[in-house]
Image (cartoon, rainbow, N blue to C red; front, side, top):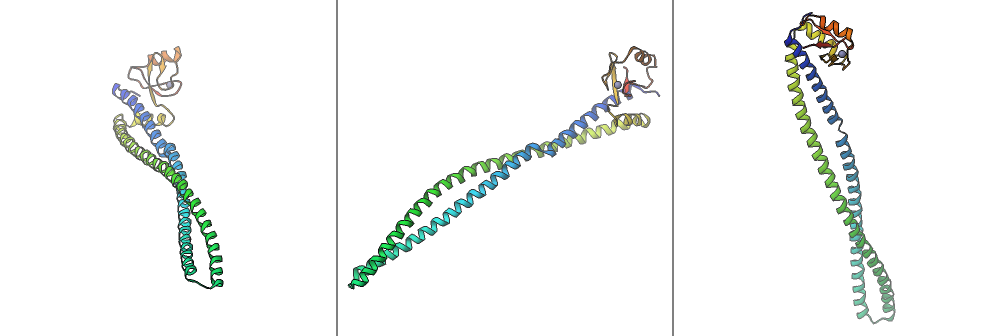
Length: 238
Ligand SMILES: [Zn+2]
């Protein structure tokens, strides 16, 4: 079979375009696989769970604190009422009863004040933790959003590039004629379909060809279609 110089250059260009297509597809797959984004998503989820736990602890402490404050207010009202009753009472028996109740209330008040203090201290600690986790949680969220946007933008760019190359390839492939195209496709399915012969080396398989093979190749007419004896790629001799 004969091959023109133009066809020879075209199939070498096809090899380059096919390699570019392969590289672009690999890059697209790597982004879709998204190890970087996946790692950030795991970090974000862990921090989201941590943040939720810290917020629940803070709110639960807050509820307990409010309950202690309400109980304390009730006890204080009771003490105030009892003191009024004590001032206005003249019965020794009543006075003894009120004083006994006041002693119990004073003990209860002291317990509630201790509990309130402990809860207040807890509240400060929990607020600090919540703030700290909140900052890391927002940071992880921002990092994830930025990585997802960057991956999305890169995907769009790579797919546009792939479309453009695929279109160029289609035109080039259609331009070499059906017979040569079929020869090219059969070889491309197995590996590199064509290469230039430079310094006795096949540009497709990189093998240095022997003197006998090179003699055969050089003996063929300039427009004869020849193949690498090692890898069967189309060899372009110019
Ligand atoms: Zn070869």
